[in-house]
Length: 71
Image 1: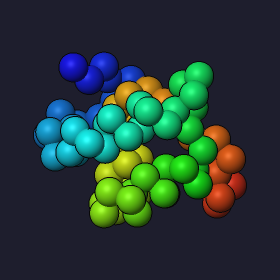
Image 2: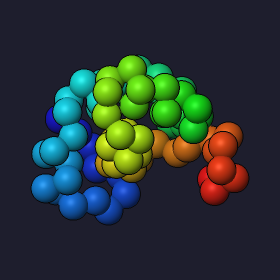
Image 3: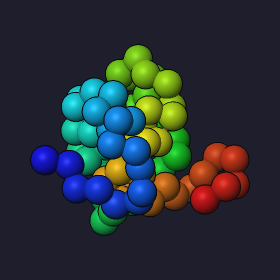
Image 4: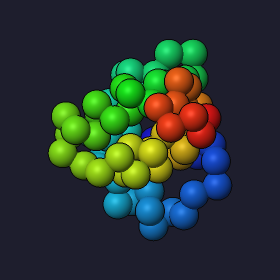
């Protein structure tokens, strides 16, 4: 079961493939994941980065080393 961290629409969560959640959980360390790794997950799974971002938000994981300087 997915634990919800940040406020996110339940309908959006249902649209995220389970494999995205699993990849994010496997790659996060200490509740954090790098921006570069999140982008790699998106590319590897063939989804747009925003889908991975929504999974990251839903799991309450923080993005680090943002390539755009946003986080």
